[in-house]
Image 1 (cartoon, rainbow, N blue to C red):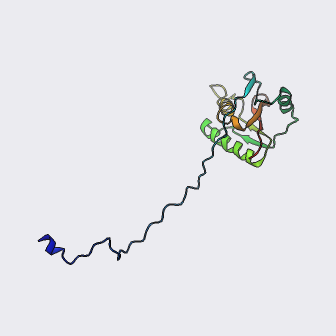
Image 2 (image 1 turned 45 degrees about the vertical axis):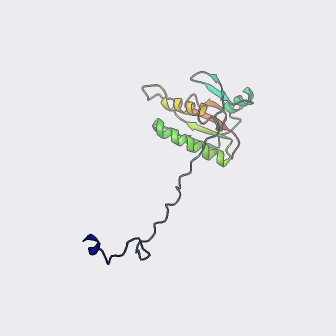
Image 3 (image 1 turned 180 degrees about the horizontal axis):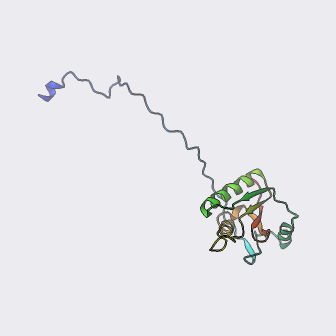
Amino acid sequence: MFLAAIGGATPLDGAARDRVPVPPPPPSPVRVVELPPEVKLAVDGDAARYAARAPGVSHAQIADLRSGKVHATATLDLHGETTADASAKLRQFLLGSVRAGHGCVRVIHGKGTRSEIGAPLREMVLAELLGALSGYVRALASDSGDGATLIALRGSK
């Protein structure tokens, strides 16, 4: 009885389908940026006046960085940012600075005088520069007391 009822039907997957094929989605516009390998930086100083340098960087080069003989050509101000937002902005800023060929940059993070738990932005910036972002860093030193950090960058890519 079923076969008699569908006897004159034609299959849907035949050549007479009226559906348009759906093209595959375009590739994602978001580019994944791989960070350079981490470099072990030698750290000098204390919480108020600090410096760090990659292998092959002398103390004289750190002194030049601190004395102003090396000028920052770009600045990032992180005042008022949360540590999560500041971390993302710091990564973008360093990547853009290296690509633009900047030799030295300044990151203003503040002294943490309005924070109840010290200086969370300064601590985050230092942790990132000594950790995941250390591949971009040739040397770094505190600037303007301890409210900013000067960063001498490795060569541009």
